[in-house]
Image 1 (cartoon, each protein chain N blue to C red):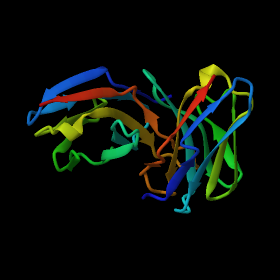
Image 2: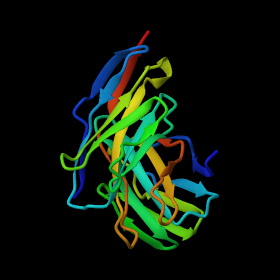
Image 3: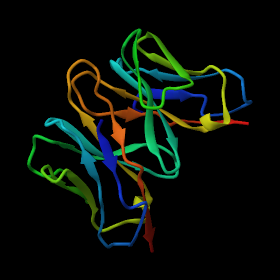
Image 4: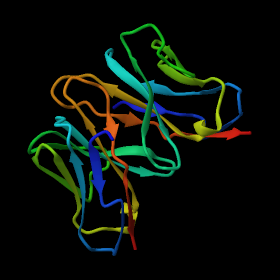
Length: 117
Length: 112
């Protein structure tokens, strides 16, 4: 079974600084997707960034970028120029791309990010 | 809005009573999922559906059942609620062939 591990239960960063959240995963599949979701206090799950495993280029979305190391099964999230609104719980997640409807999202336990003014 | 709604948003119920949570989508997506979120555990899959009347169990399915009689609705039932089922429940949807999951706003369920 696939597993996702986030080793940092909590992180903090100063406003305008850069922070990196770690994620590792375990799978025997070669074709899959990786995600970072943000969950602010509103409880809403917001997709931050998505990476397809077959793409070597790291995904970026404005101030958010990933460092995808397929061989090491590592998928870290870098937040640049941190803002107060970035404070939230961040979840790393994995989904394989098998046929037949068995695809599902597997989550890590989350990292709580605090942004200090 | 992404076209997915969960109801109710909050519910308090007594131990031993049946509870049904509803997930409704207007996107006509094939896949629907139920997750529960607990502190220290992230989100864990309860059940999922890959079509009308096609459902399967996730990793924490004990004590839960689901039904999907039409594309737009996916119901999660706790036959006899227990305090260990106090949690926040999320529904998610995904179209066939696309790996983008959209989540509802969640239902906070408290079993007293």
